[in-house]
Amino acid sequence: MFKIKEMLYVMLIPLLLYFLLVELTGVINYKVYELVYVFLLLSGLICFFLNKNQSALTLLYYFYFILFFAIPFLIQKYNGIYPWGVHYISEDNLSKGYLILIYFQVFFMLGNNKKHVSREYKSKDKDFLYMIRITNVAPIVLLIFMAAYGFGDFFIGRMEDVIIERSGFKVFIQMLVFILFFTVLTINRFHSNQIKILFIVTALLLVAYFPLAQPRFTLLGVLLAIYFSFVRMSDFNVKIINFLLFSIALVLVFPFIKYISKDGYSVLNEIANINIYDQFLHIDYDAMLLFMETILYLDSNDFSYGYGFLGVVFFFVPRAIWPEKPYGTSFEISEYFSYYYNNLSNPLPSELYYNFGIIGVVIGAFLFGRAITYLEFKRLEIYSNKYSISIFDIYTMVLYSTSVAFIVITLRGSLNAVFPMFGFGIYIPLMLMFFYKNRYGK
Image 1: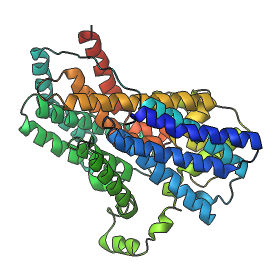
Image 2 (image 1 turned 90 degrees about the horizontal axis):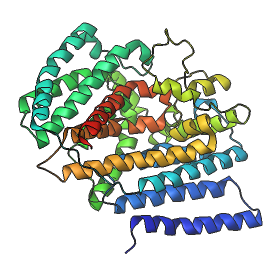
Image 3 (image 1 turned 90 degrees about the vertical axis):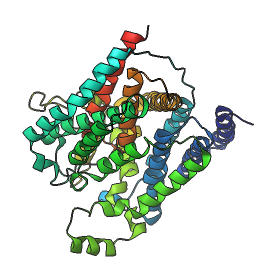
Image 4 (image 1 turned 180 degrees about the vertical axis):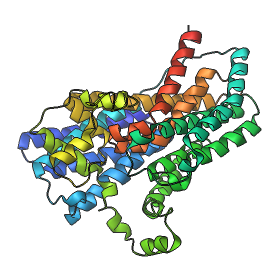
């Protein structure tokens, strides 16, 4: 029986032969690249179903790129109707775009199938005691923060049309609550019984991420992180069922969540007028279009050479201090093409290409695949060891939960717009992991 990597190579061989044949004959158009890209996505999905080591992050990756990215664009192209009033995309632009996506997918698959070699980090009992004491005090500190900000503001209005910088303190509080919740959840599962603290932190999480006040991607992301904290994805049937359930939810649930904060009459009226098929022509599914527009933009403009990513890395620096702080790719593209709205999506392959060209796409895709592999292997390793867990492992699980919650919105982009929503949920666990790695890793 083939191993996963061997299966991947076997599937790539006919593609390479086909490309060689096309190059020799000179007969090619964008449909060839389109077919190859779809084939690679489906091949990767099959590899995911067969690989016991891959779990939620890989699932959500293929969920996004197949059902949120590729299929909607195919429907838009078939109907000749694109979001934001775009009426035409040239075949040359389509060919170039699909070729870049092929590079991205191939190198992601190579990175995502490389095994992770784990190291053991041991923590002392007194360190666990300090950590448990901190988790007992942290809810009080967070309550003070939330009171200072104003409890009422956590219950009103969605943030979809609000600039993130205006609510930076609120986002910071939300991520602290998120980190505390998954820290306590992990400790409670592996090391110590803290049911009362878990109950209190759950209540804080419900307030911080009150459903009627959250953007859909944030709300669904938090729910996914909680869900995948309890669901094991090593079984083939479980993977199939989850992918099918998510596919159904995308079609039947996602379009309606935006209406849950409206009054009952508006909800019923909006739902009655929703056409499921037409939803894929909506601006919610504009990622592939913006990717193609970015390629067209770069035909007559220079790459950012990483400057665009500075606004992501240093998202916490206020624009009042850094007036030249980059706005992001979607802002640049929308301004260039005179869109009537500038807070648009722009997927990860587009961000990498905009900043570093094809080299950035190749290296970025491979590293992204490796990062997912690391987190999924660590989760599998941690959950298979029910009696021993280190503090390094706890914060690895927090980082995993943050990644699960926000991987879809990260893939959708644009990064400058969405990373401030969860950036502290990446930075804080990484800093704590680095600290314990240096302390106990030698």
